[in-house]
Amino acid sequence: MKKILLSTATILALAACEDPYNRQGVGFTGIDGEPRSISDVKGAAGFLPDATNIPAELAELPTISVTTDEVETDKVSRVAIDNGGRSDTNSVLLSGSDMNLFLSTVNVNGTTYGVLRTANNSTRISNEVGAAFGRNAEQFTGCLPAGDVYGKGSSDRSSGFAVPLNCS
Image (cartoon, rainbow, N blue to C red; front, side, top):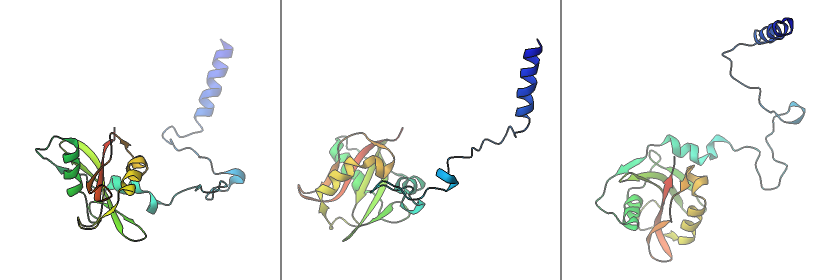
């Protein structure tokens, strides 16, 4: 009985030293107590500044909601591309070397699409960009791709791309 009481008293005494409502941890600050900001591996980053966190920027923007009578996936994707964001109020601006692209999320008939498009329908980009967008949809949107990438345009150049997303 004394062993149980002594163990219980020790645990209670140690627990009384800490605020029970303080749930913050100290975290890992690197070797020698120095915060890490540069990766030792070539091509990797120790941290990304908030300004380049595209999924976080996209999550702060409203999802554009649209309804359509179309039921075929490629036609619904074109509706998503047509309604994709083209301003900083409803899309994330991705600056490229020769043109700017806009990344947004569009909900068409209950299906969420990640949409990457140009500023207008007359500007075209290579379909290789769309393929890369589909492969890296999770990095851009924070959601898993739930299907193929669809483009609006010709077989070699398009004005935008849409990929259905699984954000659950």
